[in-house]
Length: 303
Image (cartoon, rainbow, N blue to C red; front, top):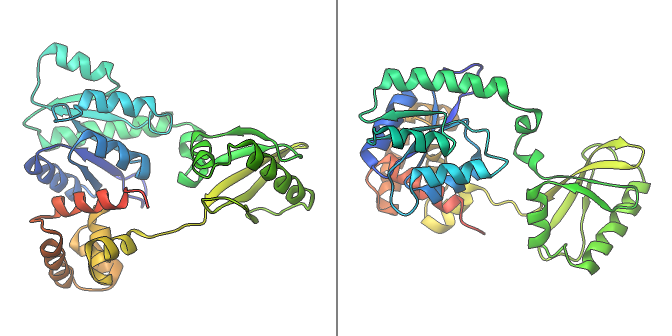
């Protein structure tokens, strides 16, 4: 199903481990990378962090059902273009209408037929690529963009930038003015593309990266955080895993098979499985789906 050497990434959301396992197996056999979530809130968090190419969404779930989950996805500009296919045992016309009105592009009733699922996914993935805008094509770092004038005054910023500014208290008048002076002085010295300026006096360590000059008095910048903690480090610390176990868990959560993980880490699939058995024991789960769920939850917790 892939259109290039890069695998499609699909988020499967279902509160039934059996359904998750079945659909994950079908997708992996079709060379699709799989992310999993057991409920709506977790699905939103994963989608915001990893932005899958498609979401397969169970309609009936506890806490937040699939219809509300889809509405919240579509309300987020960064996620709104991701095609959502509903999977459910609800087959009445009103349920189908409800799913489509919530923003779904298709609606499959259970039990899911693998060939039909893959065929419909292929169509919607193709349509999504054809209609994707230039803004959607930006990678995750591109979501933290802002423009300023020659005096360092903010002209425009994405919601992600404004959130980081609020977290670092940059929205306060004093720090906002200080930032403007820093940027003004920096821009006067004609920074080059990808040159970084570390911002001072902030609770959250931030820097701006120079992207390009868009107009005589407009500059495009990227806001980045200088705190970087890898998923593997989090798994080691929070789950008491060894370095290798943490690496294996990271790739399991990314939807990789034992064979693929072995190729990435230069170890045999059998060795991968041995590490995975230790992971299961340490984190108290019985299968890959549950392990991936634990890993994704840990990775998405605030530092």
